[in-house]
Image 1: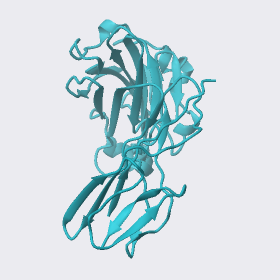
Image 2: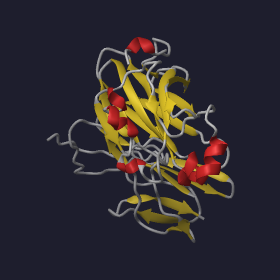
Image 3: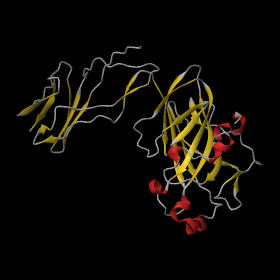
Image 4: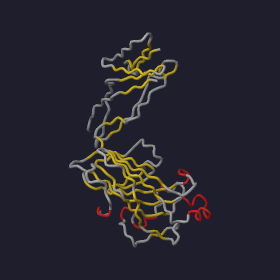
Length: 305
């Protein structure tokens, strides 16, 4: 097995009221609130959420609403045909210097899901709802924040609408934000789709929100390095790939790539051999060896038999 870790050099051409929420420790540089305000559930059909079909749009949308314990909204899923605001406790990670994570378990135990399923089939287990919490950014300057939204299709952050989250939790394209210090309100649309989440047991939704403080500029994505397999002691291809993400406010143009301090790991007969090169060559004191070259003709390393 051949493992290659390379640094990539790029040349850049820049062309609710807050008191309603319980917060994490004030010393945390970034933290989600420990409570979210929940409104729902409302009926939804298969694949309808992608095209909108939000009954709260009749009231101006969830983003324009404010939590009120006495206000009711029509819902065909509720026993009396109406739903109210409720509070949802989030499982928030311990304060960290760079990240925060909030896990939401959304469920509505007061509804008679068995009766809905008996009347409408598995379609009766589909619903949508909204949750509102806060994301607090500490410090005294603007921060670059990478936001992951597992199982979320649509959300608002402050007054900015974001559609197309990470409904299937692939974590391939998180949202990059530039946030000022202070509290930021996040409204999350919750969608339970039977085709994606199943129709066995109570229809719950697990949502993971993770915010990570990062740096602006070009970022090599951890764990994205892809190299060809070795076949009969040789690389199956001369090409590899690594994902990079623009975390700057401006466009970034990559005008050159260069491998720096390439480190190679070769595992043979249970032994691990680690070695580095700084002059374009890898020296391995073994009996026989094969050189492997990259697409540019520069040696990537040597595998020893």
